[in-house]
Image (cartoon, rainbow, N blue to C red):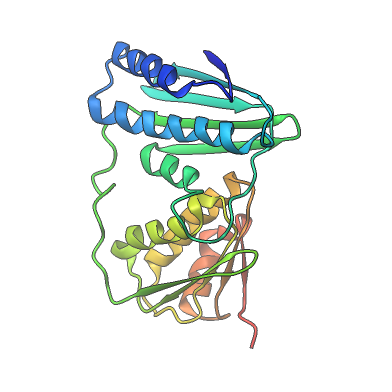
Length: 242
């Protein structure tokens, strides 16, 4: 375990010690780099967002290799993360970067502090990870609003186009950190990929303490598919107004 103060020059020490540890457990270079990126983002978020400006807080990092070959890193602080602004910029993408580099990110926020649990299997990741899916005529329009990001998806999104849409939705939602409304009112009949993408972003938002709102026409193919998917326990599926 590594404990440090947020106002100290901690990141260089973290990289060195974490790099030594991943090497000691036989992690390949690519996986070690992915883990370091995710851990670095979690620590940076704690240092920058958990405490008020000028407050010198504590961040704790603990890493372990479980018996099934999964690396688990826990980053904990005693403060409260501030939700990033909805404006799309290069900042506020910490959760998104974490989710792109590990298999699972679980964020737990309480009055006593925030804990981020990062999990990454040392086994090879699925072959389709990081490989852009083919586009099938759908388009994604992102609009920044005062309290959320509004995403409109138009056209067909079959199952093999779901990965591309999932990345678009997670980017708009900053990995789940920003409230998002997904408008599927203009979605085509081929919608399996859209349902999978919505489920992924809803799960990410739930882990970050948010809830996705999905707009879909009652009785449409996507409405029926969403009902069957069980996504309602993670998202609010409602009919568009007007």
